[in-house]
Amino acid sequence: MTARAAPARAFAFVGNSGSGKTTLIERLIARYRGEGLRVAAIKHAHHGFDLDVPGKDSWRLREAGATQVLVASPRRWALLVESESVPLREHLARLDPCDLVLVEGFRSEDAVPFLEVHRGGGGRDPGGRPDARALGLASSEARELAPRLAPLPVFELDDIESIARFVHARALPP
Image 1 (cartoon, rainbow, N blue to C red):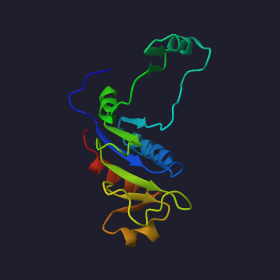
Image 2 (cartoon, rainbow, N blue to C red):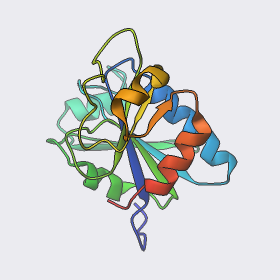
Image 3 (cartoon, rainbow, N blue to C red):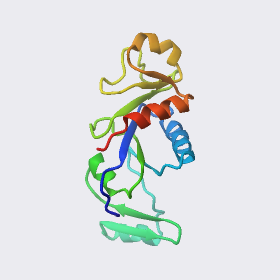
């Protein structure tokens, strides 16, 4: 890990599975990269996951009891760490210097501001009100929801320019 003078600005996106969080973040990364910004991403996985392939050397080393295994190639590296639950702030501190960190998930933490993401046709209905801590809502049903949720900012999921400006203006160091 490279030390940095100040924490990167960060902003999160929360919502149900299938709401469009990953696609939105993917499009925002491309938009910010087009401006020349260095962008990092952190994704929360609710269920266990494994980057290792069973039977391969790194998997075997973890299975043998190593609490950390670093796998490196000439183009990328990954550090696999066995640990208890780690707060978002600690994950943010591990990242190399960058201009902006976009976070998917971590709704239960107050480390960074967030936008709730909603796709109509299923999942949680934000008609009642998104999470009270959300700074706004990005939805496929923005036109229908905006009047009910005023004064909360509501964006169409495809309005990448408006969302990018909103996020960049409100991203905060953790």
